[in-house]
Image (cartoon, rainbow, N blue to C red; front, side, top):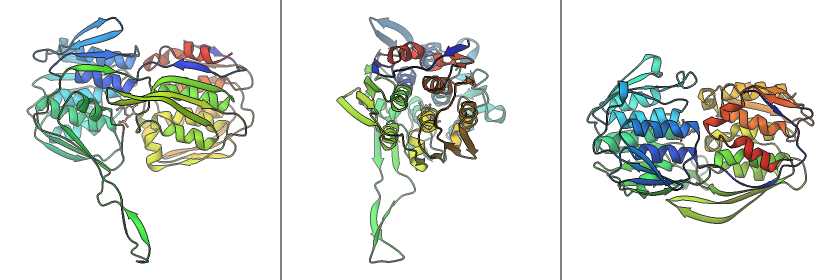
Length: 449
Ligand code: S3P
C-alpha cells in the first residue's frame, strides 16, 4: 500500500504509543512455561506480537481477555502444534526465543517464517542449544528449523554477539528443561527477560562486573580503569527455576516513541509521550538527542512489573542540531533507533558517523543499505561502511519516493523525515508499519499539522 506524505508545519503534541514489543513477546512466551496464569495489560496489536501470542496458543496456552487485559493460561502439558509447525511470521524474537522453549521441551516442532525472516541467521541460537543437548536441523542456519526437544544439560555461555535474543533463548531453554544456565555478556543487552523471570519469582541472579582502578602499566604513578573479567554482566538461572503467574503491565514502546522524539528534534517541536518504558538498557537515544541539542525532561517516573516507565518530553527550541560519532556499546544500546537517528542526522550540521553497527545488515532489511538509499533519495550524502554509516547533514533535503524494503523501522523513520522535506514524498509500502505499530500514521497525524 503506497502512501503519499506531505511536508508539515508543526510537529508537537502529547501522545501515548502501543505497548513495548520486546516485553510483550516475553509475556506471551513465558506464559507457556509459567505455573500460573498471566494477566497482561497493554499488549500491543502489532503483527510481531501476535506471532508470539499465536505461538503460545499453538503450544496449548489458553488466550482469553477480560476488559482491556489479556489472560494467558498455561497448559497442564505442552501441546504439539497442528502439523508440528509454528509460523513465526516476520518476528525474529519469536523464532529465537521459541527455539529455546522447544529445545528444552519433549516436543519436536518446526519453526517457519515469512520471506523476510527466513534469510535471517538462526545459527546464533542453534549452536548453543545444540551444545545443551537439543537437536536442531536447518539448512545454512536459516528457517525453517526443525527442533527436537531434549532434557538439556546445564550451560555456561559467553555471548559471541551482543544479542538479547540469544541470551533469552538460553534462559528459556533452562526454564523449559529445569537446568541451570549462566550467560555472560561482554556487551550489555536489553534485560527484559531477566526482569520478567524475577518478577514471576523465578530463581535468577544478575551480577554486574564493575571496572576497578589499577596502576597504569606504562606509568605506575597513574591509575586507569580495568575490567577484571572478559564480560560485564553474568546472568544465572538456577536449575529447577519455576515461574508463578502474575499481572504484567507493559509500558509504551520506547523504540516506537523514538520516531516522534526524532520529529520534535527536527521540527523545532515539543512532543510528550506518556507511560513509555525507561528500562536503562533501552534509553540511550535520549542521550543522543541531548547531545544533538534537544531538551529532554522525564516526569512521572515509576516502576510496574519490574519495568521502569515515565513521561518523556523532547523539545528543541533553537539552534542547529549537532552531529556526533557513535560506536561500541553506545551503538549496541540504540541499535533499533538507528533509522530514527539517521533521519535526525540528515538535518544536523556536520557529519554523523555510526560504527559497530554490522548487526543492522541482518535485521528486517539490510538497514545500512536501506537507510543510505533513502537518505540519498532525499539528496543527503551517505556512505556505507562495513559496520556503519557516514551521513553528511544537509540544509534542505528534498521530498522523495521512499522504499520501505519491507522493514517497519525504515518506513516509520522516513515517514517522519517526509514531514520536513521540501516537496511531497511517498512510501511504497506503508502497511509494513503493522509489524510493530499499526497505529503509527494515526499517531503521526495527531502530532502534525
Ligand atoms: C530484541 C533484541 C534485539 C533488537 C530486536 C528485539 C529483543 O535484537 O534489535 O528488535 O526483543 O530481544 P538482538 O537481540 O538480535 O540484538
